[in-house]
Amino acid sequence: MMCIRARLAREAAQLPGMKKSIEISPNLVTLFGTRDENLHVLEDGLNINIDLRSDHIDLEGAPRDVARAEQLFADYDHLHRSGFQFQNGDLNSMLRVLVGDPNVTLRGLAEAGRQRSFGRKTVQPKSANQRRYLEAIERHDMVFGVGPAGTGKTYLAVAMAISALLNKQVNRIILARPAVEAGERLGFLPGTLQEKIDPYLRPLYDALFDMMDPERVERYLEKNIIEIAPIAFMRGRTLNDSFVILDEAQNTTSEQMKMFVTRLGFGSKAVITGDITQIDLPNARRSGLLEAIDILNNVNGLAFVHFDETDVVRHHLVQRIIRAYDEFKVRQAGPQLSLLDNKPAPPEAKLAAGGKPRASESIAPVPGVLAVEPRVRD
Image (cartoon, rainbow, N blue to C red; front, top):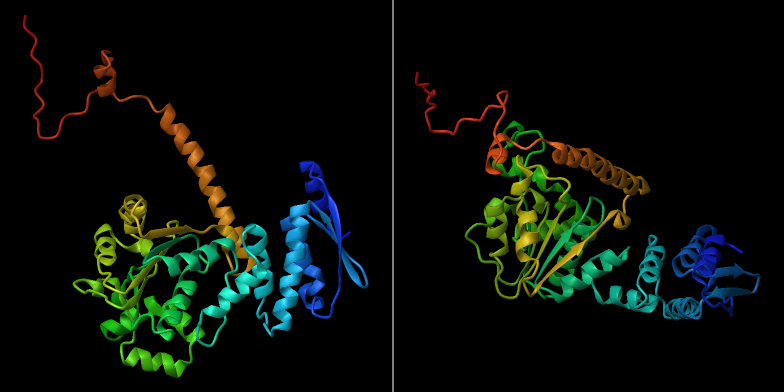
């Protein structure tokens, strides 16, 4: 047996087991992955046992889970026969999405990726939330993607924008970002205003050049088919037939966010991405993204997709780092809350409750009111 945890989980749940044998065809061998890592994903995700023999595979687990695994093997064989090729770890990512959502099939994920044209690159969702994110962008005119760094919020939004442009669903792409400094000032950079702003917009350029030929990107930029600008340049515009992306939205003010979400014109889509744990504004409570989440949460036609550390697609250490920071915040919040609970009530509260201040307690003066010293009559 390859995995003991799957058996223990099934026994703990006291699920009735069933066995199924599948013949190993030449097409199925590539499904296993390096050191059978893809089979381990299936075992852990579906709570089944996979016993790899020389000419067949034995599946054991709950009937529903075994049936899902059997369907996956059949889908992979069909895709391989039809000429579909998995690239850059896409198969492992699809399997993780599949085991997390019982309504998803491998064939459905692969064919959904075929329908989208992302320029020179194939982009597949690498988690269940990424799949929901892409589907939300397809179905809604405005989508908020909120989550930690490295979850693919901006990259997937740019991919969907390129797909819409190449399929002639929109006429142009507009990428906006607040030019908020993280400890430094724009003025220290040399050059013109645009040259000062470009470094803050570089992540958007990187995503474009990763998916399209450099010559095509330059041509689109020159003709303003693709426009990259700070959010301050959006004021007063109506954006028709456009795919608009606002990146780093946590650094917008309340006024900037309201201004941006009201720019949307006919035939346009807007995607707003941000990480509420990395707010660089002087006062975090003024973040336009936080306010928009509260105000627009129940507005029809909008979609909110929230990511977490399990959606991180960067180095595996990034997941652990994000989790460590989250746990640290929870530990820090505990002592602060206990201090607030144990904080003595102010004298004003005691007076309101009918108490009298002790001689050692002083009442703070009211601003704008002169303090008059009481006189004692003889």
